Length: 166
Ligand SMILES: CC(C)(COP(=O)(O)OP(=O)(O)OC[C@H]1O[C@@H](n2cnc3c(N)ncnc32)[C@H](O)[C@@H]1OP(=O)(O)O)[C@@H](O)C(=O)NCCC(=O)NCCS
Image (cartoon, rainbow, N blue to C red; front, side, top):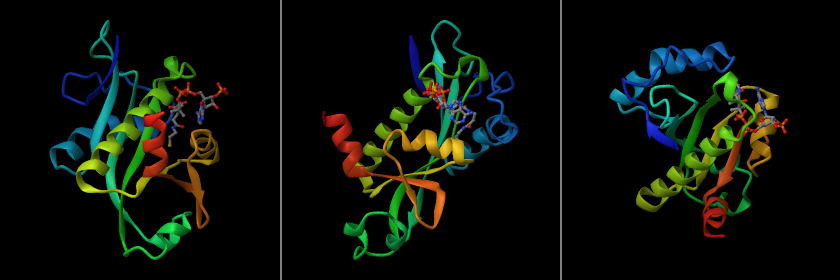
């Protein structure tokens, strides 16, 4: 069975390779330190049959955004800045790509964002895409690129809520 868990010291970070040096390096060198310092959380997708092997991971944190930069005119007269969650990294092991695991992790990040929204308030989830291809990947899930930076995308919390209420 597949599960999404918080990264811990037993997970095999060295054995993870998504094909992107920087994304591998973050998991191997920085993810645990960020968690210990409460800067961000890294969640890993694990199969119970091989509980140490990391199928994929994402990093979630929070950020502040300027309402005028959000492609949602309803927010433009809200206080500045506004709170949001941020999916700062998403990666799947090369041997496991194109089987829907990226989608599974993205959905998990949306659910966790919704939980933060219920408990502390968030206007939505932002994503930093590493390139145009990654931005196109996120657009498929309804994320909207920002006008001033097409590699930053936004999903309103109302959309996330509707997704899980359906
Ligand atoms: C992007 C990524 C997380 C998607 O995860 P995945 O489990 O392979 O994706 P899914 O199975 O949910 O969806 C498959 C779709 O992802 C897209 N995709 C595949 N590889 C990709 C890549 N390297 N970059 C961007 N999109 C990619 C394709 O459009 C594919 O659709 P298709 O099979 O119909 O062509 C994964 O390919 C990956 O880790 N890539 C390397 C790191 C990366 O680019 N991360 C982007 C975050 S900034």
